[in-house]
Image (tube, rainbow, N blue to C red):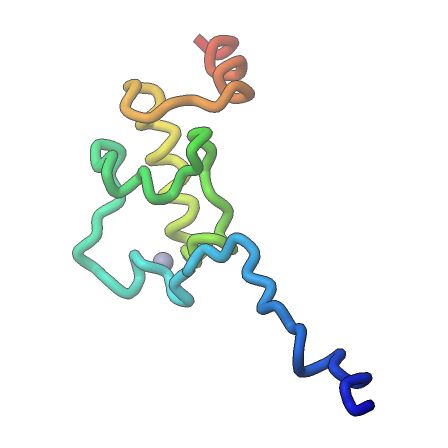
Amino acid sequence: MSDNYENDMGKRPFSARRFVSRPKICAFCSDKNIVINYKEVDMLRRYVTEDGKIRPRRQTGTCARHQRALASAIKRSRQVALLPFTGESLGDALRHQ
Ligand SMILES: [Zn+2]
């Protein structure tokens, strides 16, 4: 009976949750050519979820400074209907108008 101790080696499922391969460094710091502009929808899309929410920094690796710039660009982009609102911020936006 040598098969009793199969606990550690045998079954260790690499718990691959939903791993978003995130860059460790801010994409905008590392590449100066990327301009954060509300009209760059293709670029902004990478920083919002399917719901249209802004992705948290821990997912995107964006630094604080660029995250702010990104957030305002995304919000501006919503105002001109280039990006969708989430349900929550839609109510907010309507209230402001
Ligand atoms: Zn940055």
